Image (tube, rainbow, N blue to C red):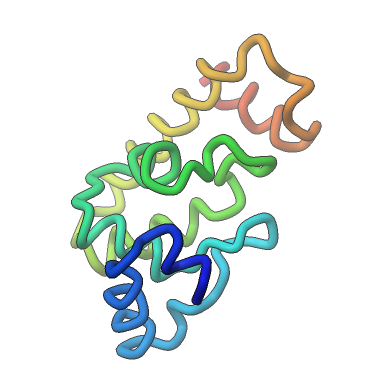
Length: 127
């Protein structure tokens, strides 16, 4: 709760309301982050984040962490489909754009990410 209040101020109560309506949103997005699914949904609904890159790079900064958000792309896909009513094709395009974003930003910094994540970024660059 303290982390949510520090990060969102009074907006933390909106996140708690989301969790109250759907307790599954209280799950952490992946083992590398304290960020909850409700925070991703808050970014989409309350902060009007329109893309996966916007949520992961600008709203939560997860893109700049050890997993770069690659471990939670399926969660992002589910949230955008269910709550933003985005089509699967549109979300897949967003995922591709996010991978390109990561590839451009890490081209000179492979030592900052793990071998597995770097391989995913390299694969996205080749496509």
